[in-house]
Image 1 (cartoon, one colour):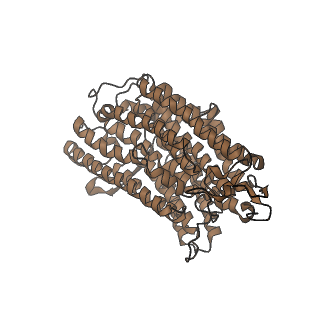
Image 2 (cartoon, one colour; image 1 turned 90 degrees about the horizontal axis):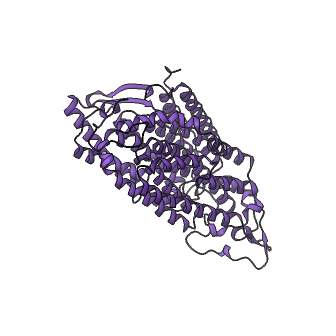
Image 3 (cartoon, helix red, strand yellow; image 1 turned 30 degrees about the vertical axis):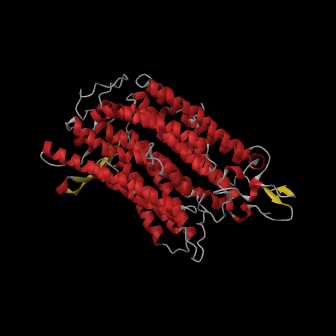
Length: 569
């Protein structure tokens, strides 16, 4: 099985699927989404087969493919995975079919005076995004990585800008400009690496294994590190490069938001591990305290902002910023325990926050509003929905027994020996996480019925959105024909009608249960038995720590300047 080009197939299959779906007539939306589901499930199967073919105890990069692409500049179409990259491919394989199911009956917002937009393009962009996401994690040529890194912006831009909420154009442009700026700065560092490799090796190269063997002057390292770091800090995002995410997460359709915070943002933290630490170890050690300041500031700052949010989608977006602070803390603590926890956090955050976004979309589907104040007493009407909402929230705050707990625990116990002050401050974020998650759950699900659940007995507002398919459309959040209420100010629904009755609300449908079940199962299984995932990522984490002079059996990084820029395995 190791001779099969699994990684090439994982890139080509969704790309071909995207082309086929894009070629369909706009009226064939049903066929388009069926093809999208079939292709995404095939990619999941390929991810599983890739995992079976991968040997955690073998070479660092496996299942490699390398074809000369631009020989004159030393650029190869080179693919390969270690345990860290493979874990992200598995996450992609799981999340995309779930997103397809959650977006199954989404409809774009109406455009006054213009024909309704077809969802066929949505499915095509989604599959293309899946192909590019696989490529960015599988690339072992730095230039190829940069190409995938920038190309990912295009499908996500159209997913937000064409199928998002009322402010979708602003959010899409902001997302694109921030990411493009970071990418252009990284390009300067990529060129710098090529120049350094050319001076030391006699010919320029972008091959990762060759670049990490270079002996780069520490001052030059800092300049090159800065270019990569800015791009990854924006993508992650770390404070103060985070401001695009709340807007993009709030305005993106729910399926787009799940992939945005569940996978795309992980490219930033993955980049720290794959490129910043091995290629620039001296700079990484010297600048780590400044990175940790940003990480811890993000944990506290984003958590405080999340507490004050009235928009559910913005709240979940801010929780992700706080979580990425924990991941950065684990990476730049320079211990194998903390770094392993950070990688697990990347996977588990995608599962838990992905489920939380999906459930929030289901709530919005039933009420037509993103505002917390427009809900109350929903648990009595939809107990299954409330139960999944609670589990997603508890996983997001890392309750013991859920998948996120192991990740957060490893980060904190691994970071404390080397970064005790930062670790202690970060623990405040745990308390704040419980506050913003449980307050949102309590206000939406408990208490007396209010807001969208109250209708006039004379019939004003007397309808169930689920009767018109809003329960399906609303899985897309912003991409729903149901008008939002309460956004941007006080709303009439806050006042109970003079003669009010409680609206009937549909609980989870069979399709919705099928959508959330895989993520619920992963939250519980990985919360109880995370060892297979730990075994998968640990060798790659140890190799990365070895690159910067950390003894895999210990927790103390070597003194700055004690090693070259590249380690050997």
